[in-house]
Length: 186
Image (cartoon, rainbow, N blue to C red; front, side):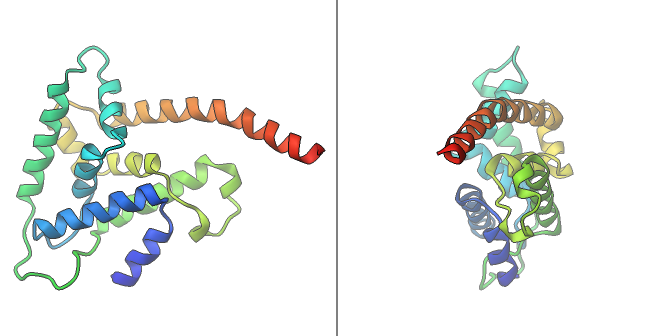
């Protein structure tokens, strides 16, 4: 799986690859047999970017108390504690679970669909942004279950992320067009 991991990391932006590496380290630290979407969600929630945390708060506009995010962290911690540990200490990092592999492939598909310029590029040339990774992780059933336990809705959090992404796209696309027009005319 090591070769597979390096191939996967080539499809991620540096920020998304860092999250994946931290998730693998967390799985190894906990002596888990595999790295799962739960590990990635936990890493994203604790991330210095705070993107997932802000999306969770935006998804609950009437009750965005900081303790709700703390409850979510605790629910993810409990879910990770429930995962089976490896019977022996692995020599290598824990492999990526099938569920996490599926989430990474969904992220790549989301990235390709969301960016028309990338649809013609080879699969390895498409770099998955952190936001697409988060959206795909939120689609995982185990992550959705934990989110529900903490009174969060994965679809609502995804909608908050997609809304912020659409605002960014509305701002960036006209700038790109003007930039291209400027350079093509000169």
